[in-house]
Image 1 (cartoon, rainbow, N blue to C red):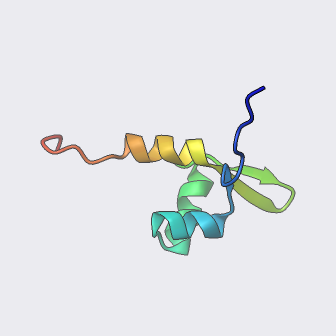
Image 2: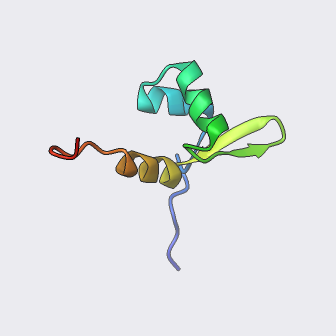
Length: 66
């Protein structure tokens, strides 16, 4: 039976801020708008790693696209 490593699969907003190097205001703005999907569990907001990685890929800089 294959086991998955669930460590760091979910991030808090503070962890997301550190990972992306964003300011708190910008990070919360992106979460509230749905630009980066998040989940509210009670009063706690959690963000899935795969959602952030998909967002990063969609926003990846590709020379010559501007």
